[in-house]
Length: 445
Image 1 (spheres, rainbow, N blue to C red):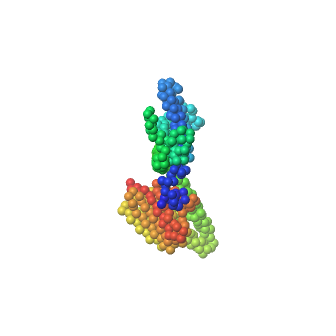
Image 2: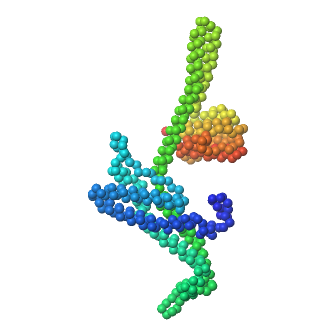
């Protein structure tokens, strides 16, 4: 039984019987019909303007005319992407904009020739122009095929409903299949012939939507391949976003370190300096009180040292650098408020950056276990799978964790994404919770 993807419920009517009346079929058919007039105008403009600009390249007029042609092609792309979103339900991002390099020292806007040069250097603009050229023959083919199939199938299927018009208005018993000059003719007028025509029409009605969907799929490929962003541009945008995440994360870490130093060790050392100053003044007048103050200051020194060690461990623990993930995670598990079993199965050590991200990922997940899970035990597993470093942290707590916006897991997922990592959370209400993280394996240099 077919499943309705919108509601998740099973369909009682098979897809082959629903297709002729579904909204998707009618939208895609409308897209194929409207493609031809748009393609005619686009093809005529593209060929005419390109020919004119190439023919006048020896003069100054040809270059800006060619740039105007490319700009017009980009304008066509805006219309075609909008049609694809509305009728084909194709979610496609806007391509990269025209990037104009400003070389003037005063920093003011670029002149017209800079825009001309940017348009001519833009691969996206040339792909839009190519779309205007190659889409025309395809649009013509799809228009004719879809319109003929659609009209013929419904005309034949509904033949029993309109067959009576043939003797009434056309003065012939039915559709004429054959006729010659001797007056011999064959008409579809008997009940059997009418039923046969209706059956053939029904088959065509059921077949046509799938042809239309196939043609529309090719249109999707054309729009996505020629009018969407290039794979290189998408990768550049991803890297720019990842760089922004890395910068924000580093800035947040620096603010956290500054806050911890200011509110912790720094404040404690300031207080220590004041107490030692008072003790120095009291050495001659009240040696016993001065000794007690020095003793208290000694305790403060120990606390300050412990805070600095914890802070240094939070930046990058020495045990991770010296001995690797296994001992570092075992030490981390020992400080968790619930019993944690760790298992690290690695035959070599990854790059220090990946190792550090893995450590702090497990650290944050174990902090969540301590603070929110109400778990009685937890498990940490680390292993390598091909070119990926796998981390899994599970607990038997109350569950309900998720990567909703603003949560700690959402920030962790962003951090992992900045290095092509992945975070998957499986935490039904009532538990248990399993968080799996993937990181790219990068060997040590």
